[in-house]
Structures are given as C-alpha cells and as structure tokens.
Length: 393
Image 1 (cartoon, rainbow, N blue to C red):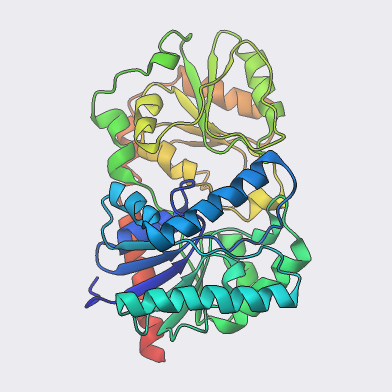
Image 2 (image 1 turned 180 degrees about the vertical axis):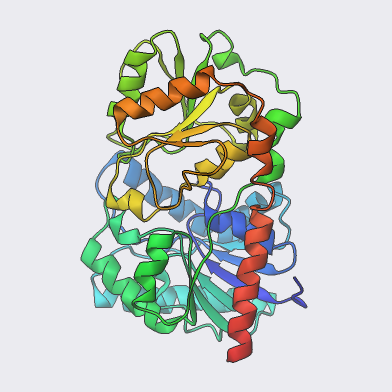
C-alpha cells in the first residue's frame, strides 16, 4: 500500500472503549496512511441509568481532552499507532430531531474542518462505520466515500430501528462503495447500492498463534480449576444462549466452563458450580487463557442480530489452534478444519464431548488455516476496493 501521506477520516466508535473491527483495520491502515479517527456521534438516545449517564460524562471528558490535552491521541500512542489522530466531538444523540441534526452537523463539521486545517488534510478517503455519520460524509471534500458495514445496526439491542434504517438509507445514497463484513449484510445492501463488496473479518494471527507456538503460563484465576476446560471469550450479551451453557454444565459436571468478557447490562450468567466467570481481560492476555482451553464455543441464539453478524471470535479461536463447537451460521464453514456445527443443545454437548475425547494433533493445522486471514490482509483488500473506486471517479 502506498499513500503519499494520504489521509483517511474514519467515523467509528469511541477509540479504545472496546475492541472493534474498525479499529483493527485502522491500525493496519495506519502503517501506510494517516488516520483521523472520529469518535462515535451516537445513534441511541441515552436513558437515565448508570451506564448511559456515565457514558455521557465520559464523552464530555473526552471532548474537552481532545481539544486541549490530546488525551485521545495518547491512547493511540500506547498502541504504537503514531499515524492515528483521534477527535472526540460532542454530538447530541437525538437524531429524530431535524434541529438537533442540523446543530450536530454544523458543530461537528466545524471541529473536523479545524482539525483538517491543522493537519493539512485535503481530499481524504472517508470511511463511515456508523449511519450516524450520514450528515458529514459528503461535507469533507472526500476522494472516496466508504460505508464500512460491520453489523446490521438496526438489529442491535436498544436501537430505534426505523430511525437507524432511515439514516442508513440516506448514507447509502451518499457513499461511493459499501464494504460489508457479513454475507447476509452484503446481500441486503446489494439491493440498495450498486457497489457492494464482502470483506470478512480478519484476525490478529501473530497474537493468537502464541497460544500454541509459545509457552504460556496458566493464569492464576483458572490454575485451580478442574480440567478439561470449555472456554468462551467475548461479549456476554442477550445474544448468548444460556440454555446451551446450562446444558453443557449439566452434561459435563466434572468439566470447567470458563467465560471471559464484558457482560451487557441486564444479562445474567447461567448458574452452576462448574460455570466460572473470569472477568474481562486485556487482549494481550487472551492467548494465555486460550492455551488452556480444551475446546471453545460459540453458543449464540439464532436471532436477526446474530444472523447479520460475523463472529470475530471464531477466527481468534482457530488462530489459537482451538477446535470450535458452534451453532449454524452463514459465516461459518461446517467443513473447515476444527469446526463442529451443532443444530441443538443435545448435539452441541455431543460435539463438545467428541472434541474433548479427540487427539490434540490438529492444533497446528487449525492455527495454520488462519495464517492468510490477518487484519493486514483485510486492510490490503479494503485499499484495493478503495483504489478501484477512486480510479472510476
């Protein structure tokens, strides 16, 4: 990739708040491009609860910090991404109001234009990873405008579906190309836009392969658990089928089931003595846990939210050399090495039992299957899509 100091303005979620596919791509793109990352403009109206009020104050603090102390950019430097600048604008998340949208557009646009002037940005590539950016993508003198669609946002919990669909339809009319990370999303957007590309998620292969290619010391919080271990890593939300977890706990009472990751508000873990919640871990810690998981699971409910998603954890499990038992999913190849697809709770438990009894000789082969699916590879593909679009304009 060659950019000659070409800039990308990337509208994403709040930088560093949680791991996301947009940030993985941005970190790879930043090796050859300069990135101006715009923190979330917000699509969901906040509620009067602890989480939302805390988020409001956090965004206010980030806004002040980005104006005066460049706090957000320090977060990028921790990731050794010196080519990423982060702007944390303050927008009112009440997008049903035309007045609010007009205010947000004028206020946020002024902030971005000031930053563009300071950084000498002209004719950038603009990537919007959220429909809330609809009022800004065509105001920045973009060379190419991209909608990076990593989810069917209107199917996400807490979203105002008619509003999100309306914002997305407006965005689709303004962008030059749509890049979708899931097949079902790509199929749906192809009915609304003439230039849609499917770009599946990648994986941080150098990190996750450490689970088998480097000696890992077992973490203290699982060192005393019964072996074998069934493991889950990821967001523990309403899309997780706790009935599957309970069934596994009942079927394998002498096996430990370890769950790692943040828990969505209102979600309760399945309750059983052999179900252990080990909390949320830093990304760099995950290979230490995966090295001691005997099988990994994707116990999702079969909902619209899940149908239109592409589970990033699958690639991470496989890169770590772990066999995976999962529900059926459009993004999952049931014939791929290390993957076992279960149609119900009973077959899910049976497949877990099969993996636990099987030889571990395939771990390196399973990991090797992900070697060409890195985020670097995905970034290369994204740039090729953008360049082809630019050449046509």
